Length: 158
Image (cartoon, rainbow, N blue to C red; front, top):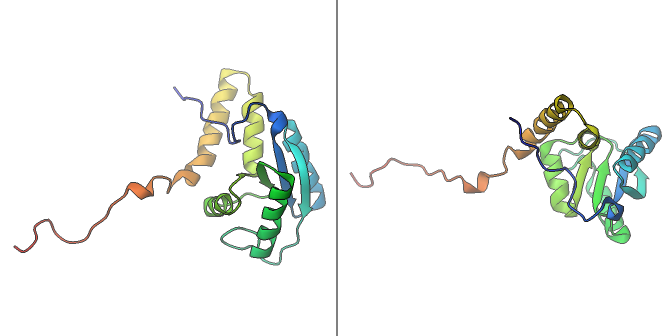
């Protein structure tokens, strides 16, 4: 039996409290992301249309835009940063560390919507499998701080 995993969103007493800053790269797609977030009960505090020349491997967006977004998150007291692309696990981790906020990429938003609206047992199972498939690469290095590797052989000085 599959147990239900946690929501991808931070825990709050109600979703009325949740505010997000949205970043997109095309106008129509950004508006659609805002509507998807409103389906989850998340208010869009501000949105930003960004033009990028190349994808930054560490954060998807450049250092200057990251600083601008961090200031915007603080200014609007937003809890969530939503971006209209699929982030790699490394990019997601780096943005979470930089912003100290919940980060939702487009697939995460869609999975959360399906999770909330699934009614039948089969639908819930399918959504849970999709969520686990989404989370698996993001959890790959989650417990690496417990690993200890040492070189050498077992007996010293023999």
